[in-house]
Length: 448
Image: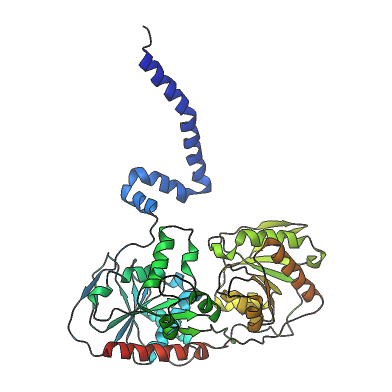
């Protein structure tokens, strides 16, 4: 039976596509081992089209807050501190700073609620109370309500004297739909980073920038970040009104945890720590690793140990060459983290951001040398003013390697830095003035 021309063409096209199909299947099978999460997302386009669409649109936490407004009068202003998901595992440096401030505001007579906006809050009140007292450092922590505005649960009840504190650009975006229902349409905005920089130019980048055009009172963690943000031609950031409204503070480096070690410590090899966070792209993991490998070839690092910290198991042991291996340090609690810093000599912590990153300041307070990168307003002079133990370099592989070798040479020659710093050494000094001002503004806003 003769093959018809159209059938012959169809068979030819299918045969041409077959190798491509084989390659596609092979790639997805290989993901089963190398990146199962990505494989699951690929399968998702067939099994869950709605979630696949969410992945394609690339909009982070677009879920609206589930709230219900009642005009019934209330006696005092109430501050709602927003996070997408308040959880025990999420208590890193930034969230802890927010918690610390929230409890200090509550001490000043302003009722405070911690509100999860995307997922249900999982913090147990007794644990939160103990954790807050450890952050406050003295006195009993006031009671703070933990609530949820997630879609899965009942609506969050709001009244005419509710005020909001957004702690991330996504929570500021969620307020867009809520504020028009409220008598007071201004809010506090905790800015601890230039958050559009978390993304490439994208939907999330644009949405993060959009929040800078809202009507808010900035609370900015670090002067170098404030100097950067308040000069950007984005939204209302460079409006003189924003600078007048802004509350700017320097983070505390807790002297009880971060201080030089005792002189009677047992002898040990010289040790370098690498703050290795591959998922936090502004920490420049790739360039930092290249700089380590370049520096490890220098005789200054003969006999040194190399440890990676800051990641929960996502960084394996990695060869550096010349007999050196970057070994993963075990995950530790906050007190144990301070012990690790005191037991080391040099920290590499790149940070492509106007924020310094807490480990840089904490290592310097422990008397070690912190090698970190400059960025815009975070100049070499600005970092040196904070501590003489900070070695600031340009964000290049070569400059980081040079800073590491220079620091190792100083340690080998017997240098041990002092803990001198212009930064506050306790959170009372850092945050009590902020809490005073926020509480005062809360009371003034509800009177207008």
